[in-house]
Each structure stands twice: as C-alpha cells, then as structure tokens.
Image 1 (tube, helix red, strand yellow):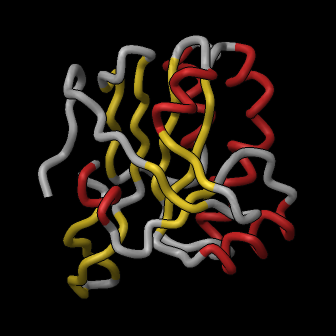
Image 2 (cartoon, rainbow, N blue to C red; image 1 turned 135 degrees about the vertical axis):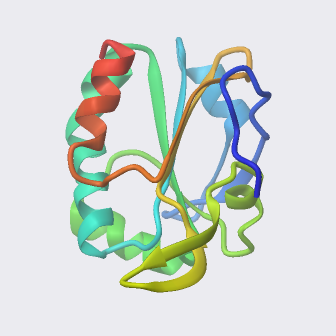
Length: 157
C-alpha cells in the first residue's frame, strides 16, 4: 500500500474502541488544539506494543498540553483491546480495525520481514494529522522503544 506523505489528506475513519464506544478522526481533530497522533501497532499485549502504549500513556499529559490527541489502531478485536486497556491502565482510545481498511489507507499494512520470513501485517507507524486534516508527519517502521520520546521532541511536546 502507498504510504502517506506530509501534506496528503489524512483518510477519515470511524472505528470501534475498547470500552464499547467508537472514535473518529473528525471528532479527535475537533477536540484537539493542534492535531491528532494516530499510531498503528501490530498486537495488543505483546512486549513492543505494550512498551509503546505505556510510553504514550505516560506522555499523554505533555502531548495533550501541546495540543495533540492520541489514538492507537490495531487489527485486534475490541475484546482484546478491552483487556489491554485494563491491564495497562491506558487513558487514550484504542481502536479496532479487524478488516485492515484504515491500516491500508494509511500505508500501515503491508509486507514485512521478520527473522528472514516475509509476511503481510501491521507496519508500526505513526501519522500526525493537523487540524486541517492534512498529514503533518508520517513515520513508518518505527521502533517501539524510544519512539514516543523522539516524537515528543519533533512536536515540541
């Protein structure tokens, strides 16, 4: 799938979330002063994804103070996200994209290599969407550890 670049319009979405609700990019953009950090991760409750989610949780106050909302998206079913939110005390929405439609639209679903094997799955990615709906920053194949700190630095949060 093609990846998004700075200035591209961010595809809108509405997805079910942990806790039984739903979240849309339009709602998050309306609530945030500067924009929305949309991050894509492979699987809840795995070591790397737990590290990344907890880093976002621990940095949420500074990101919010800087004007950004955060949403995490994975192909996990809502039930698995419910458990993840509860286990890790996550305080931002986690959305379920079991059909991979949003993952594909953002270029976060595609061919990966791991331990010499090639397969299709989630490409750990982060896209920052501005108030106007345009992509301000798109990062693909990010490392879970230290990613949020690097992102905060880039955003001045």
